[in-house]
Amino acid sequence: MNVKKRPLYKQLKQKLIQKIERGELKPGDVLPPERELAELFEMSRMTVRQAISELVNEYVLIRRHGSGTYVAEHKIPQGKKLKSFSEEMRLRGMLPGSKLCEKKIVLSPSANMAAELKSEGKLFILKRLRLADFEPMAIETSMLPINRFANLEKRNFENESLYEILEEEYNVKMTKAQQKIEVKMPTPQESELLDINYTIPVFHFKQVTFDQNDNIFEVAHSVYRGDRYEIETEIYR
Amino acid sequence: MNVKKRPLYKQLKQKLIQKIERGELKPGDVLPPERELAELFEMSRMTVRQAISELVNEYVLIRRHGSGTYVAEHKIPQGKKLKSFSEEMRLRGMLPGSKLCEKKIVLSPSANMAAELKSEGKLFILKRLRLADFEPMAIETSMLPINRFANLEKRNFENESLYEILEEEYNVKMTKAQQKIEVKMPTPQESELLDINYTIPVFHFKQVTFDQNDNIFEVAHSVYRGDRYEIETEIYR
DNA sequence: AAAGGGAATTGGTATATATCAATTTAAAAA
DNA sequence: TTTTTAAATTGATATATACCAATTCCCTTT
Image (cartoon, rainbow over all chains, first blue to last red; front, side, top):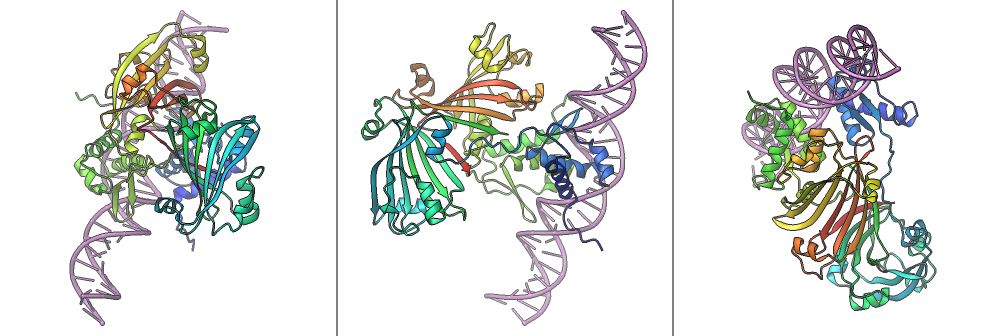
């Protein structure tokens, strides 16, 4: 007795994906026509269409009316990946740097802050001026629950990457982040730190960072110079 | 004779979206069952399912097996997917709108512009003030090569989606876009159109849009109000 | 060789029907 | 009342069929 609970169209989907992964079907290749696939796999054309439709939605296949169904060219590009400031500046061909502004432990964080971090107890706050080619680029303020990162405050952070420390010393890896990006005018302190005129607008990033277990381990606020920084991204339908 | 070239399922899609926009269907509300919708709109259940399926893919509806189909709560996630202005505002729970500012054909575009579009010849330029809940949100300027879109300039664009027209009339679907995002201060004209004080900074988007064959078919410049708009995105390692 | 036109191919839309599976509802039992 | 069970409801999967629409292909004409 054949135990089959897996839907037919999902089975076909999987077979098609396997063919692509094994290289039997390469990007740009045309698939057999729907009517032929139906015969080949002994299912109705409608079922074949359902499998193909899902793969089209997942950008794996491309349909061309009157022509055929093709394997998509771009594979899992997904324009923007989570990077640290240093990684990003290096990618842009600039030399990253850092200047410590503030390093403190907040004993009783505001309710707002605690809610964002979904954590109670003391917070470690790290405020750094980030440099690119020795010129100010951004002000980065990170907030972390100190109970997860004991003794973190003893580091100096001048020539150390926060994320590298977290990964190597505490085994916490960033895997996902949610960002809100706004435009603002800088405060007097911000424009002085960033060394820009008060008429230059800035990017405000509010980031919530998740570790490999999907727990929030950092909330960061960053202020980027609008005259030096621009966001580049690629998005897909 | 009734001239109907628009597919039935797309008509239903539009009707459902309208019901949501008009508030007849609110987030969390349950839709009539598929069998009932089929009877109501005098079409087969399969056709109803196709309409609903597409809306589910676009995060407008949510299906729950055995329970029903519901209007999605707009959580505004999905920052990384390519959307039209209208789709995005709808996701944010706002009513999209449009006001035509300028519609013209440029006979001899600048070398710069032609290079961006990788096309020679006349350009169609469409400048619209985009509204959200009847208030200005952005100024959107689209540039398209007129040789690919004959008679496009005869449309009125007041209540029509540019991308829908391109898809339905010219069979051009947007599949990829590259964006550069900057922060600027608005020009006097921009602050007047957007109805904001000159001290409010704005987002500048420069977008190059690709069709299903990976050809550039549009270059768009958008100016978004910094006091009403923020970018939300999720990024992964 | 080039251009035009029509047939064949291929995906797109639409209907009708049947059965399965998850959930909800309501009736029955405790 | 609470719990359990069965039925009804609702979406999910699958088949068969028909015709429309965009593209390709090939034959004819020029």
